[in-house]
Image: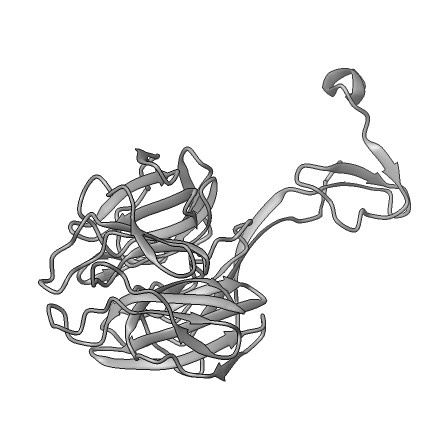
Length: 330
């Protein structure tokens, strides 16, 4: 029988204890336990702490251990001004936003931002241009959007965020794109087709939007700040889903597949195509994704609405890491 090194070009290392931080695909032989081990990439969702106030459509940002949920609403039109912060275990209430509303959000726990949204029924005059910035304690007003709208795609940091598409006060989807530099919004290159209510990830210079309403969509668009190009289509067309990560490593989870059905499906994007990931424990829609720019896909989703529109307070955390497994050599 040929030796492993002759076939694969390298030799399995022998160590007395497992590596503290194995990398994906790493193989070793533990001489203490006399066990061959490998570290495959394992993706999973796990239950996190519940929100104090279950709601949908808030601006969400940050990471699994330092998250923030800003504003939102309780169905059908009870608009919220609550801010809650997440420490990886539980949510705690913080200072309220200035204007209660259903909104888009991005940033970090200590530098969050919300923009647009509405505090009225669909098609009403409650559609917002307002931007608010959070410094970890207090809220201040930022520069206003040029076009009032809700259900924008949007991601990034407080000083570098984009807002794309959305719905204006006539309940019509638009192609408008605006970019924020920490003080004011400027017009960017429009998206190819009017769309709203999908998932987002990345930064203005490497942005990603996917899915949405008007109609239910599986389209993916990649942007560099200058224009948009088509990415690989999602496996499932849907809207109001969660989205987080970067342009080349993103997660889409949950959402609505038609007016009467929610999805629990999760998909991962590698910069070219989407593939299935473990599903959420609970199918839901209109929940706040951790929509800030994340350098990994270790994110979370929280809140949202269940079938029939009861509000959810549940948080689910997504982890995609190298996990040690023993190899059966018998």
